[in-house]
Length: 157
Image (tube, rainbow, N blue to C red; front, top):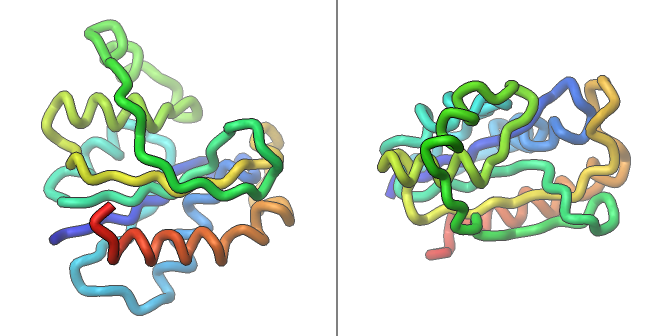
């Protein structure tokens, strides 16, 4: 089974860079040979392109749900309907306005995404400020996030 662990987000927008920070830590770890680690940034088209040919994908991203900053989530993507207008809108979407669930839905529609996907995320504190680095609340959540990623590598989701 070929597994992709993909960090998503904008490194320049404080906590929105969470996925990239986690990926950098995972790159320093010994992971199974069937696991590939990638920083997929903020381009929905890059996410689509790089997601092909994997049996399982674990996305790591900042997720605004409304809980306290630093709250960690392990979720399955919702079934989001993407019609022709949605596809057009995604093609012209700003690189800073990615909607991961819509990208996943489009990827599935185009047969470029596996069914076996999990999103591991963390409630951000600050994503509007142009600053590299994480807030202390989000930084403190990284060990828990990495543990959930490692569990996702072993589980049948």
